[in-house]
Image (cartoon, rainbow, N blue to C red; front, side, top):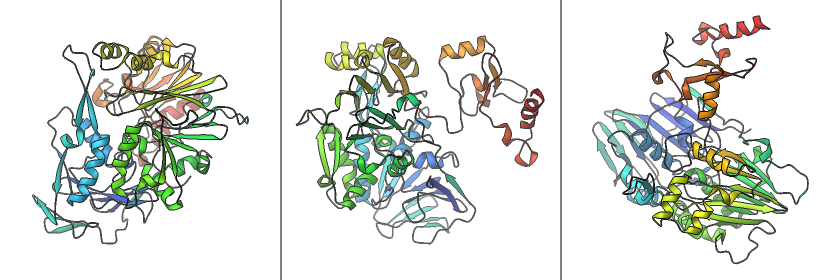
Length: 527
């Protein structure tokens, strides 16, 4: 596996996040005013937050730049989203984005596409039943155009030219992008874990070239370790990549997928975690002087051009062969592979898919807020048509061999709650339903359905819980959000133990604790 993103401390209070030593890089600088972020890279938030859990107060941007691993504006969207979510119960202080006006306009245009839309309650109190045209980038951000220099309390930020930044904190120069910056303290290799494939049954490895195959490239989200949701569908000579993860070439190589064999690139929607690798992708096609066969809805394609054109000097549409998936010129968009699409209920335009061949049908939900009560409200208030309503029902998937359906275990209102996915699954019992779009907690946490939790408690299968020093169970001492503070569980026979904390990392006081020896020693004695 090739090296992942690295997080480096260059010198006191200055950190670098990069994919390669001489390539794109983002910088975090701790100042008297707060943390300053300079530019971005794909997968920025997940690459630094576990090691430096802070939100920037200022983002400084230079001119848009694209390279082998993407562009220097991708990653900012989810810095803004997480800033909003972490502060949603407080009075939100706007995050300042500072730069030359032309650069701010480029980023502003991109974020106006991907950060629009909000779900609100209707007059009857039905949750999330109204879609409001909200531009979150304008609500979260204080856009600060500068011609050369801006002062914020003791902080002075200077732009000597469109590609350079200097920052003084009082009398001290704390950052100069033109200086040679080298690591002096430590470097952390943030190689992602092996890409999860959900379950083996979702990958069909038959040598029959006419078999319908599905490979899960990633099933995660932008804020957690691992690869964001992306899928590879194969049938005969048709090879389809659905959504483009960051550093897509490496991730395809890891799964032995020949990217040069891909015939179609499909985009489900334009939230950043589904197009993180697009600038890298189109950069590759421009440099090979070939055309990318892109298949999506017309509005999504138009938004994609708006988002990314500002990062390129060339007209990127001249390197794209676009097919409108909803209104194609030909019925054979994917050759002999049959497909259907639907419009999902999501803050921005989003698609769901079905692919079928030889009596084998697979469904991919795409990002959607599925809630049976909500859908009935949407039909009653005519937010959706009867046709769209039917496509958003479980019955749309009823002939599928399997479904990959997005879900969330967090408190957000734009994705399908786990309990509603369970309901959907019960409505089509003959279809295998697998969840995606959630991700394992970066530190590890335990979650389960309420039914499973009740069984664990009833049969006394909880082995360990996170607690206070004297044994009191409280949310304050739950480090990672595990349900019921669970840190370890037994099987029914109590001869198998699943444990989240690592006792082998606490076997010596030199490591900070030797408490893990008690568990390991008891295992040896029992054997």
